[in-house]
Image (cartoon, rainbow, N blue to C red; front, side, top):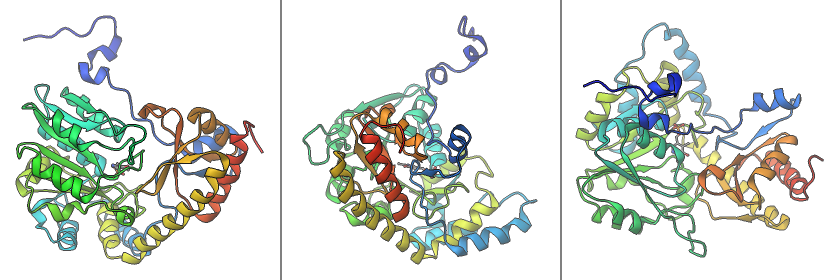
Length: 382
Ligand SMILES: *Cc1c(COP(=O)(O)O)cnc(C)c1O
């Protein structure tokens, strides 16, 4: 069978139809880019939920040591890191799939389980990568309405609606718990109930990128539910609390048969030597994670005390970021940029009245508060 390329679309027309319809993921503005635009050095970025305390010193030392070996390919099976993660989580190494960030796991899940004849379910306002990986496969995206205005967890995933959206074609459900960019979460009881009710033939991808931070609310530990639910895949990352976003390493925990399928589509050397070494060392440093959690708890209080006084509404959050209703997200984003402060506009998530702000150090939060005070008065700079 031959298929003619899409007419009049140039080389882009040669791409697969679902890919031509994709909108690329919008990243947080890099510091260097704003420095070039403004011609200033003093820029702070509170746009990508990074941890400003940086990684464990042990992780840095391990990565530096690992540089002696980087002329070699990495261990494509990630033996040592899988052993360490298995021990840490009380699972078998065969249940662990390593990724180039947990984003890579999302791609693998879509490639392994979705085709144009299937569908995937996720919520309105859910993490944008879900839509991208689903659409790239040509599978149908079934996007359920989030909890409405006035609900205690407004904008959050409505698991009852998600359950109702599942049909015979559904192979994967994506749940971000907590969700980015809304900060909303589903409780232990809700997740348990959902997993009881979901057909065992549907893969449930439970994305716990902010797991460490979410301990302050009633957000479940997905790893405790793996035993009872063979269709569950728990996603974790070293990018957020562990502060290793730049080396790209995350993982999935699942039934070994699911891990086997993910590993078939995984690129053989998807996790680099420094990433394998840094992640393994980071697991053992509970103190570093504890410091990150403390920073976020203190910073959240700082923002909660100051921003409402500027007329900004903050929504509840279980992550290291807050969704802030500033009236016009794009206007405030631009005014903050001119003051050297990068936050994240979220109009692409259907939230044009908001910006997402990563909780920073006390000094960064102070700078943000000052800049927001100026921005909310409609001025361009201080
Ligand atoms: C940041 C984030 C990820 C993935 O980050 P990686 O750096 O690819 O591990 C996954 N899910 C959510 C909800 C996130 O916010």
